Amino acid sequence: MRRWDRLLDSYMEEYRARGVSPQTIAYTEARLNKWGRWLKGQRPRIGIEEIDAEMLTQYIGKCASFRAKATVYATLSTMRGFGDYLVRQGLWKINSLRWMKGPKVTPYSRLPKRLDHVHMEAMWREAAKCHGNYSAHLWVTVLAMLYGSGLRRGELERLNLEHFDRAEGTLRIDGRKTGQERCVPLPEMVLRCLEAYLPLRHNQLEAVGSCGEPALLVSRIGQRLSGMSISHGIHAIARRAQVPIHSLHQFRHSCASDLLEAGVHLAEVQRILGHCAIQTTVRYTHIADPQRRAAMRLHPINDWLSERRGIA
Image (cartoon, rainbow, N blue to C red; front, top):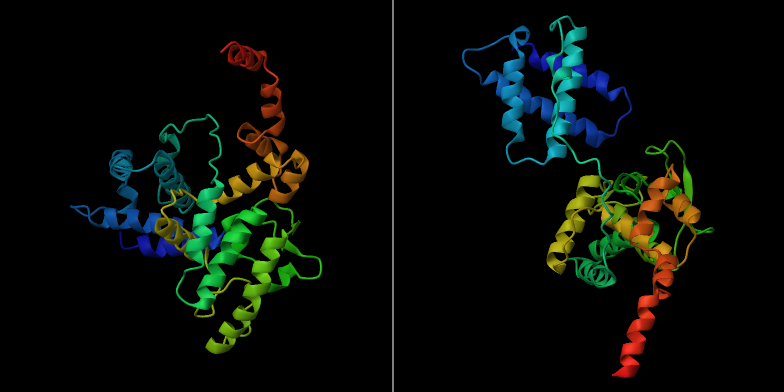
């Protein structure tokens, strides 16, 4: 097992060359390091060539305890990739992980979960109470951009100052997820939040000597606000506001649902969110469809209720 670390470093160098996100690289490396620590702790010691299907099954079973199905499947997928690398290096004759099935993840589409206006307002009020004037403006702006433009967390993290066009009131979003850039017009409230935040951003960067930082959203120490920091910050605000939030993607769901409920055309919502296929946007019509609500108001059963009230 002495070669494990060297092989892992070589594999991760190859993995980075694929152009995947830093978060994915970090998660992949962490899973493989965890697997390596488990193998190194086995007694008697074993070589990489001696890792068999029984041992792989034992480790996967250990990883499956108290874990979500998606997490177990992701771990198995990461191990398969490294197993293929070991086959290419001539250390394994076959990759037994290719014949191992992961947990059955339900194929049925789930309805997106949205945040109601009461919960949204509670989070905004709590964000405004954050310690320090800069932090308060930063987190209110983050909330405004997540809900107001329906950005994904990674898109928000990668935004640079140059991507914000003040004159046009738009954001240029990279196409790392979809392969196509898009330009998103911002609502008036989001523009006001950004205009209030940007002078404070400039002062903060000057104070810490990081005026060259290109990121639009920066931390108090003058560094780009990472995706993990955004998640931790929003979840902390939600806990203080006593709002049950499961994922930052709920802001994106809420943006889409509320736009459709306000009568915005489905194709426009698709362009705003950057969906490649209209089928992805159609999901939101199951929770926000004004035409469907209007149709049900014409149901004859409503007339029966009116007649019964007249009799009463």
